Length: 198
Image 1 (cartoon, rainbow, N blue to C red):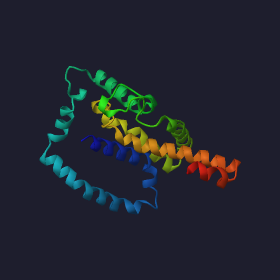
Image 2 (cartoon, rainbow, N blue to C red):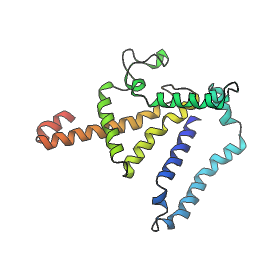
Image 3 (cartoon, helix red, strand yellow):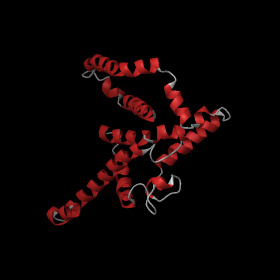
Image 4 (cartoon, rainbow, N blue to C red):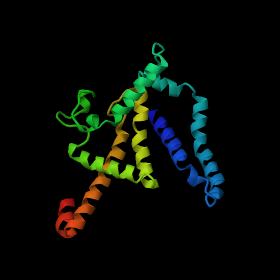
């Protein structure tokens, strides 16, 4: 259910961000084939939605989403969405022990992600923002920014936002690789980098 939201928002952002690339003269000849392929792979989804129009809304209501609460105003719903969204991106939620999640979903005195990975993830995030003109970094940033969207529709929870682990791991790897490149420039790689990696 919520994964559909993630895929839809990510696809839309990727399309918008790379729109100029898609409409370059050398790429225009591919567009009709890409559109046909998109329609082909989307047909089963749309057939299912037409046959069961109540399922998506029912799943959101079943999870107790504030979106279906008629006592809240639009401003209150947008405020709740913003709160849940930014909470889902917060390093305090991911790297520091919290009481937000159910007891059975946390390890006592540990965050959801190892705290030692945080400096590397922040360095990777810095490098991605610094190199945002390159498509590979834009994709990483989009992956990070869309992960809390589906869970923000209901309420933040580790099981609802596990897909955050993918960009978090990629940013940490990017930061770690940058540190090892710096070490290689300072010392002989075989003496420092290889044992550190091991």
